[in-house]
Image (cartoon, rainbow over all chains, first blue to last red; front, top):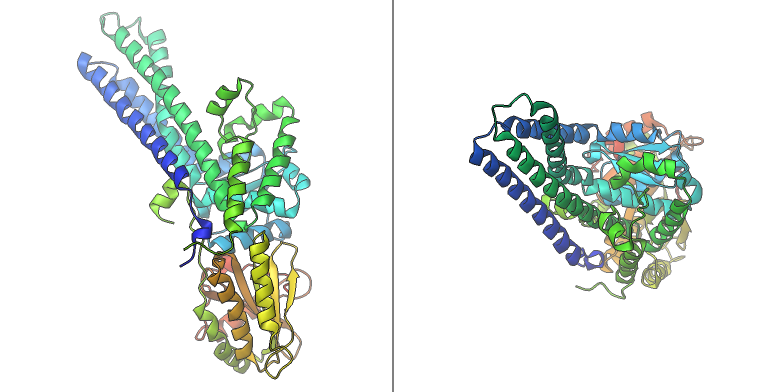
Length: 316
Length: 194
């Protein structure tokens, strides 16, 4: 079967595997260290770790199951029916039939910021949201490119993958906070327990380091997932150039947005089409922290797909 | 999608299923017997054109191939190529109403040309048009990726006659693989050839 016009990017797969492996490694090391610390001192801090795990796990489960509702509410988006928005629904219908996937619900957010996102733990529970600003600024074929990108996020179950990946960071972050407060408020009462202070300090230090590392790894993973969604989206529509021009329009539009909107958009950032927040650090630092790959990188990949699709004969 | 594909964020483009299309001629006879709808003789293939010359060359080749016996007995009219507002391309083939076999052969020629050149994933749907004595319009739509059919009966404006569609579903479900998931019966308003 000649299908290699739509080849997956092996390099991207390898880099993504490495990132996920590192995340797993950090997780295992983290658990081992915490257990090690607790065992070494027979400690009383187990309750803190336990609570952090319960809270962290709970947060993840809630955000997984309610991600669509949370995101809709946060963006102020309204679900629209096919009767209200036949054009938009028609576009999604066709893309879903082309990709043979379940059709997500479609919603429109009133924001003027040109952007789109998809959320929900699986394709049955997903919502595809586009902002009014996006619909105003993009031509139909560019909008279709963006929708294909978002549908690829749904197909790749990115909300699930990113939630599981973030679990470690959530737990580690909670541990730092819990340990800090317990020292602040609980330390005095347990005057008889001389061991407690260094343990709490050690747990805080380990958690902080783990939080920092996993934060960077998650951002890296997020950038890879964006590239993967760009690739699948462009292959679905067969028009990488529409996605390129959409990206260019949205990125230049992004710069003009007032900062208040940007801050409000921050929690949803990981699932947006283009990052709604610009970091003001040095170039290298902002690349490291960014949830989305740079515009140049995304365009470079799309141009490569353009060449692959245009090859004279399908390579066997 | 498999677990690994999810993990790595890969989408395997879905290859079309082509064989079920050949069940159409016998379904058309059943449909006429049960509901009075007869084929208009026109049918169309809808696909998403890929940018670049390679694809447009293939498209031109297919058109020439189908036009070769246009005008001859059983050859039908020259094919029409149109682009809809969603950016999808429709190749419309028109025959006499009793040349269902020739029509399906034409449609299949488009499919195999795209598949042979590695563009199978671009195929969206095939549509065969029917009419009854009251001039009601009906189409049987074939979804390539699922290998299933569904009826589409547009009335005035952007409305569809769901009752008629369900009636047709009942009539032809012995002959055709009907799409059971009703959410996938998406409307193709203003489809050329309908």
